[in-house]
Length: 284
Image (cartoon, rainbow, N blue to C red; front, side, top):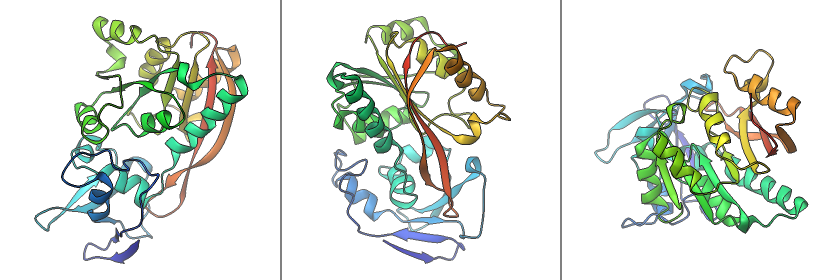
């Protein structure tokens, strides 16, 4: 991988390094493999001494016509439209490892509890283009149901990782339709994964609560969240919801670790909490 400063005053990242074992490692069925598409993409970050809040981070990406286009990191609908771009930005350039890390933490918890991963039926909230479900499949969880508010996310999952999800619901869980709720119930879900998706307004507490309610009692909850959203001064609602769940025993935590989610555009680490818990009751 090489980095140079381009005319935009930004660091350009490209390279032909191996993507073996990375998300998107070849499921894309276009004329080239997804790994080849990722390698060909050119992404430029802001200057290293520029610092942005995580919600305002951006990059520029070379387009087919030779121009450069700016993408905000939270404009997922636009990013998902370009094959390989999500993986290029967050995994190849910024070193995100959350799905693999959390799947491993989950697998360890299942082993300690003597639970067969093949018996789990997971609801993947904020599913995006299927990276977490791919990691779940790698540890033996074969039945995953995706949920995302963006139709572009489902289209990207079907394009990049066809056949990975048993079902994929596009909808707003803060105002879930009765038919969608019934559809989820029909999968008899006993695990919930929410990785690299909570906070910043992408998935509010009410949506998380709806997903949680669709998981069987005794089921599993696997989530990551930035440490700031669990602090006492948090105003998002997650600190109160998760803290109350732990205090009441509704969330029985069996694994909890701080880890580096990825790098910020200025190369500083973004620290998240990884939690694996059992559902023992309703959240407040």
